[in-house]
Amino acid sequence: MAIDSEAGRCVSADIAAGISPAAALFHSLADENRLRIVARLARGEARVVDLVGELGLAQSTVSKHLACLRDCDLVDYRAEGRQSFYSLTRPELMDLLASAEHLLAATGHTVVLCPVHGTRHGGADAYDALQAELDHDLEHLDQQADETEGKAVS
Image (tube, rainbow, N blue to C red; front, side, top):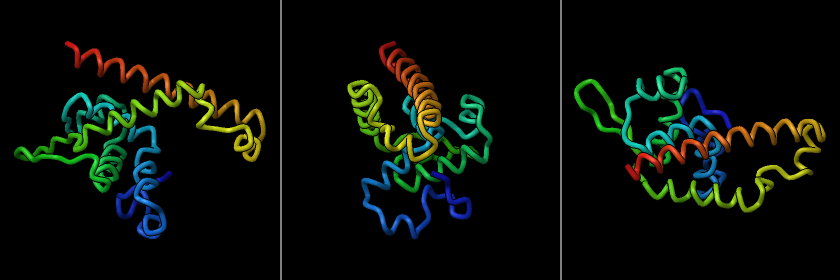
C-alpha cells in the first residue's frame, strides 16, 4: 500500500474512515520497509540518519514510513537538541510479528498468497514470482529476528 504523500499517512483519511482499527494496524505493517524499520527499532532507538544508513533507504522514504508508524502510535520520538531519536512505543508489537512468523511457518507461507489470488493476477508465473519474492522477504525478516534475539541474549 502506498503512503499518502501529502499527509505522510499510511492511508488517506477517506480510506481510514472505512476500515476497522485492526485492518488499519495491519495496513500500517503491510510494507516491507516499515517492517524493516520496526525490526531495527526493536533493537533500540535510532535517528533518521541511522535508519537511512543501516537500511539503505532514502531519507524521505524513512521519514514518510516513520510518520505512518507514528500515526498508528507504534513509534514515537524524543528530541535531544536538534536530533530526534525514534523508538517503538509498543514492545508487544514484536510479539505480534513473532506470532505472524510462527503462523507463516506453520502454514508453509501459503496464508500469504492463495492459488486463486495468483491466478487472477497473471497465472502461475506471476504467483511463482510473488512467492519467490515473499520467500526472500521472509528470509530477510528471519535473519533480522535472529540478530535481534542474539543481541538480546548478549
